[in-house]
Each structure stands twice: as structure tokens, then as C-alpha cells.
Image (cartoon, rainbow, N blue to C red; front, side, top):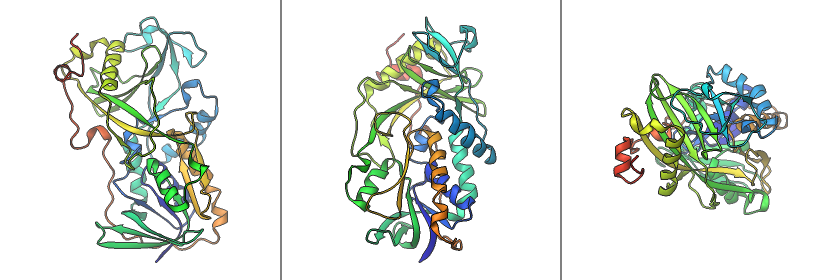
Length: 386
């Protein structure tokens, strides 16, 4: 039985930041992940340090500047971004910009143009940096057997396809399992109204990839075109991650732990059409490639950006961490740090055996994802000919 001050369940950004928080404070800790690190919500996402695009007040930007940027600097992960807002009406966010500020190829139409103070981050590089620091504290396996009444006394983790087990005796457990959190805490504590506020929504990502000299590395929120476009540059290539706005945004109760969703073909087609409106030359650049996928996003209630780190009712030593924006993962880790004084004297860090854990690929780079040309999209009925 391995005694640890904190057992973190979940190998995404939130779980890894929790591990970083407790390990940096000198606490014994371990992390259990059922899949490669970041394989769920984290690497389905845009890689945007969203501070509300200027509409959400100062709190999210304060979190980014006070917590996130120093953390990324410590991990040698650089941020970048050239952000714009296209709005049909004049708004008081960001700073005014002229159409000449946009890289060539974008068509803002009659939209009002503002420059925003958002930032992008290389999501896979961040997960890799955290993995490099704590690989000896991470177990790839499934937390299969939980023991205790009113308090978790032991957790048995199956590794190596169930042929081996690691048993933990944690002082505290943190559930940071993304879209699997609601299912996990319900299984351990029973159904209560505490987490009924969790809403799962399906998000579509329409991707474009091409050489940096042909595809601008500029990001924009366009209420004019109904999309959010996040541009990432890696080496000599640029990838656009574009989310089309959806008027019908249903909630889903039963969603998979890996955050995978089946795309709606109509939403995908609409997403490509909106991209062509804002960047009309897409279909005339033969070097560009296109793909699309969908995943589930987890929100707390109806207000985007809400977060929580709180004890699960009915289990004395179980906490749930739920961000709905990347910056919230750092704020939750800070809140978790306030637990340290209540954990008693630190226990020695045990050697953590387990199966090798790797960093997952970005969702659009995983096996089975097909990248198409523009003409192939037309042939498949995913775009109308121009």
C-alpha cells in the first residue's frame, strides 16, 4: 500500500497542474490517468488562454497575468497570438484597429475591427513539459476499486491491462477527470444536486492547415461571421482551429470520458462556409488541407468561464476540480494549495510503479483523422463549389 498525501485522478491539464501544485509544495502525490496525457478535453481544445475577449470583466485576465504566465515561463512554454474582433456593431473592448491591420486574405466586410489582448499557448508542449517533470509520479491505469465509507481509505489501480495493480492509501483525492468527473463523483458519493449544474455541450472544430507563408497566423473572434478562429504556428506550418457558433446548443448528460463526440455534418459544412466568407481564398490555395472533429465541453451552469474546486458532499476527502476555460485550471490549482496545511505532516514520497505514460497527440493528428483538399470537400458534399 502506497501512502500519499494526494492522489490526483485525471491526466489532462487540470490534473497535471494539481500534481505540480502539491509536488512543488513538498507533498507526496501521484496521478492516475486512464489514457495518454491530455487525451481528453485538453488536446481537443483550441489552446487559447481565454480571458473572455474583453467581455467578461477583469477576473480572468488577472488569473492569466498573475498565475498562468509565470507558470508557463517556469516551464519554458511561450505564448503568442495576434488577435482581432470582428463585430457588426461598435463595442468597447480591445483597441480600435483598421482593416489594414489584418493580414492579407482576410475579408472583414463591413465589420468593426478591434484588436484583442488574448493569447494562445502550445497545448501539447505544455503537457509534455509537465510530464517531463513528474513522469515518476504518474501511473497509467484505471482506478478500479475504491474502499472506505464516508472517506476514501484506499484506491486500487489496474495497470498493464489488469494484469498488475497498484494500491494507494491517500489522505486526499482530487478528481480532475474532465467529462468523466460527474460520473465518477456520482459513483463514489451518490447523486446529489451539487453537480447538477454541470452541462456538457458538443463543440465542433473545423481545422485548416498549410504552410506559414500561405496561411496567416492570426486569430479572430467574429460575431460578424459566427465563428472563433484560433491560429497556431508550429515550425513552418500554421493550423487554424475554428469553432462555428451554434444557435441550438443542447446539453448532453451521458458523455464519454475521452470527450469524443460525433460531428453534425450540417454544422461542419456551415463551419467551412463561414471560414470561406472571412478568408475567401481558402479554396484557391491547393497546398491547404482541411478536417473537422467534435468534442464535448464541460460548463458549470449557463455562464461560460465558471469554475469550481470543492469538496464532494458525502466523502470527506474527495475534491472535484472543474474548469471550463484553460485559465481556470491554474486558479483551481491555487485553491487546492490551500488544502496543504490541513493534510498534516508530509509523508515521504514513495516510488510509484506503473505502465509507461505518454503524451497524447493533438486531436487532429491522431490515427484515423483524414485531411482533405478543398476539391475533396466539394466531392464529399462538405462544401458547395465556388
